[in-house]
Length: 169
Image (cartoon, rainbow, N blue to C red; front, side):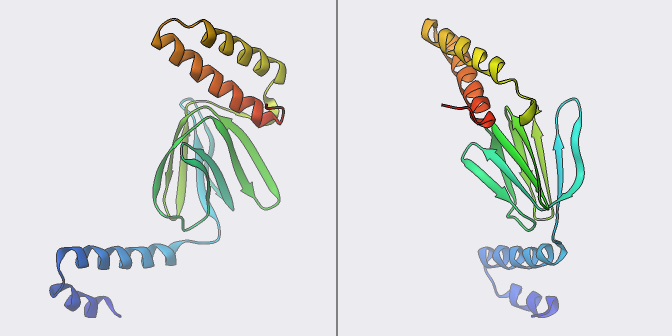
């Protein structure tokens, strides 16, 4: 179907039909423009870890579960949860621990904006265990809702860090 013949069809469609038709044409154009690599940017408030890098796949720790992103992925906005962001390129995999943030996924590129990030191999297991222990103590001693919420965030982040190191519970 050509665009011109499609326009004739649009005149006879209801509003929902027109939206579906325009979405289908847009998806076909996006699919044709997507290559074998994903254009990827990984940004922190103070620096760009990756900017416009061409990678094979990214695995994102989203609040709804781990999400693998390949070129041509459906557009998505995902909230990050504490966990490991894995960047796959050929045989290499870079792994970063992210505390929180958002991922903006488009068919031809993906941007991950994290509040904090560290390479997994740079995490100090003893310091993570100490932080987890302190957070658990604070949670047990918390007397008001704010203190409980703050301590629970610490427990969640340090537990995810410990899991990322391979020494998790």
